[in-house]
Amino acid sequence: MANQRVSVHGMWSSRAVFIMATVGSAVGLGNIWKFPYITGEYGGGAFVIVYLLCIALIGIPIMMAEVLLGRRGRSSPINTMKRLAREQGSSPAWSIVGYSGVVAGFLILSFYSVVAGWALAYIFQAASGGLNDVSATDAKALFEGLIGSPDQLMIWHSLFMIMTMAVVARGVRDGLERAINILMPALFVMLLIMVGYAFVEGDIKRGLGFMFNIDFSKVFQICVEEAGQVQCRFTGEPLLVAMGQAFFTLSLGMGAIMAYGAYVPNHASITGATVTIAAADTVVALLAGIAIFPIVFASGLEPAAGPGLIFQTLPIAFGNMVGGQWFGTVFFILLVFAAWSSAISISEPAVAWLVESRKWARAHAAMVIGVFAWLLGIGSVLSFNLWAGEEYRWFGKTLFDLKDYLASNIMLPLGGLLIALFVAYGAGRQMALEELSISRQRLFDAWWVIIRYISPIGIALVFLNSVGLL
Ligand code: PHE
Image (cartoon, rainbow, N blue to C red; front, top):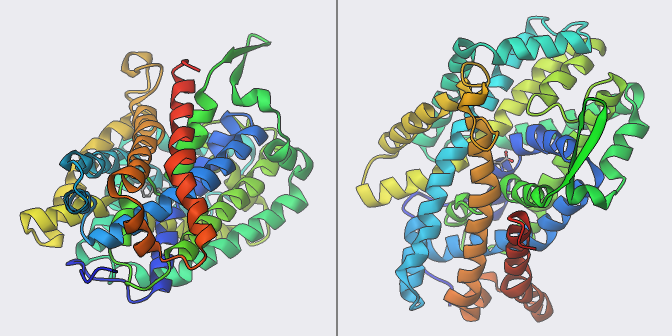
């Protein structure tokens, strides 16, 4: 029956605390920064639908799998996978899931911290009145000024990394837990107010139309305007990116959720918690999109502006609304908190592993990881200025884009695929039954079919499609 193990890293005091911490991990820059900008790049409605399908059919079932594995193993993802593979008589090679998660974590942290740094910079911009009355052109110039300066970016990147590691060093429980309880709901309310602003001042019809009008041809092709002519090429990329985003936004496929699952109390139900977390995450992403696109269209901006999208649009709203100086400041503070609680979870698999296997103190592990991720982050900083040129690009992508692409669109889905396969075939039904203890047999059976067939086949199809084999 249920296991008697406890985690050496501490435990969540209740299921509610687990839900809050995991929402803290899931809701972050992925929802508010990345979701709107890639939706803009990949043409809107159809992309959003594919993303939602991936959340429902791949994300939620795999999140359940990660939590149940974590709770069963009660250690860092690397050791959990080793331990469970041994107990279930499977190959020790399954621990590759844990190792690849640690690598993906470094890649993600090294660009996440830079973007979170932009949000930090904008707190001060907003607070000092720097966004008051800005026009679309001013907002763009302001953002380009920031990313064009390696010095400024380095300062903010360093500050964010120090903030993150300071909390990681203290442990998950004592870290941000209390703050998240208040700040996440506050962020949610702020987003609702932004949506209200978009309804009144933005081009709500075009904004919503862009997000929800489904033109499926866009899922299989990318169109760019060149010299007045629209050029389209067929590609599996939008599908791959939508799936990658489902993993990224739910913090899946790299062990963050498995690590948090290791601290879940024994009798807490996993299914309900997972659905709540995924729903909260999805609502936040959709609200961010609904708040941003009407402003994009009302201000004559390009939805495909790229990673700077929210930093070029939200300031226009803050600059022109009543009380915008105060409002913008609070918004960026909350955004930083959302990013902070996510960044902490990105490093948890690596930290927990070093503490277990090297017997290091958490503070020591946090410092080592922070330094590595910070160094790797310098490449992300330079991608926007000194290394922005063609000679520093691979496959047409800057180092920043490349790290994001590799981690989010390839490593996370691959990790997720392996997790589904391990639960379904490596560990087997009995373990899942015991951990999930779903009272309604039909519900369990449905999940079992999804995790055995639908999620792995879905991921495999998207991969095959993106390399042109389908
Ligand atoms: N889910 C987080 C976000 O949306 C990012 C993240 C990715 C966190 C992977 C943990 C692991 O911002």
